[in-house]
Image 1 (cartoon, rainbow, N blue to C red):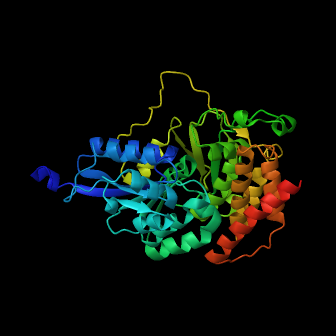
Image 2 (tube, rainbow, N blue to C red):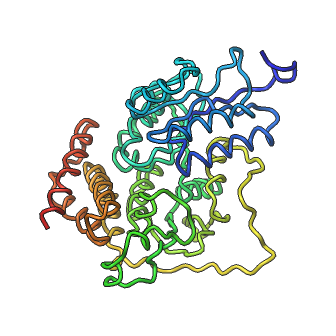
Length: 410
């Protein structure tokens, strides 16, 4: 029962975090803890959290959340969801004291949780294609979705657009660049003329093509401004992350590829910009920290004190903007091509890239093979302009197999 009459008057906002043990998921837990301190009118409750391989981290999240999660009537702790069935079953066997009703096992448990009527908001933070079905489930259920899983829009942008309109789901971007665009667009009543995505340039911003062909895994994982998981860090090094963000922006904001630009901004302070018809350019700026866009996705349209670093205006800041070099970073060309044609191209590019990054992380291919392999697979697939979701998933599997076949044969 609530602890006092005042507790009874508070609204509980139940949040499901899909991919809770990664960098975005961890930041989301921090945001929920902070919101319970700065938002006295509401209880922000971690309703459920998912993981794929880190069961110990999931237990730590549940234990930590009990210190600030508002108690519901039956004192139920947050649900623990395991996308990997073997890991989930092993977890139950080794933790017999945890009620089975609070544990979900298998990919279907994530889908069921995303559609649970108790859930108010879903933070979709699973990396890659693996997050597609659970994110779509949340959209189908008409939830507010904090979208950190850009692959959902890359693979199935038109499908997502149509579904969200039908169910009135709220798609609020969590990627810092797309959150910045969304925030800037609140300052204008007309559609923007251009949206300008900023890119840090990654660890190889000043490297030439020969140097990149000899890049080591260690150097590729040394991002200068952001702390991210290995897959996203490699995507930043190839600038494939920006290519995928171009595609995501095309569908998320319903703008043609010609209305999207990319510039390099090494300091990662300007997160993106929007240009309007009168020539005005609005930018969203803050130190590089994901808590701000995550919190804004949860609290929109309200702004509350956030635990992210403040902009220290007591020191001099250099804010550089550089032209994005598509010759040294050809992934950008692929991103704009795919954003322009749509159809099956996004699913194929994303799948090929995920597979190629995996091979590079395993030491089986060179750094420059990643984008070259993606380009070959994309160029050799049978393009369809209006595919159903089933066809996109079929091509996802084909592209992974084709990428491995081509790179291993080279």
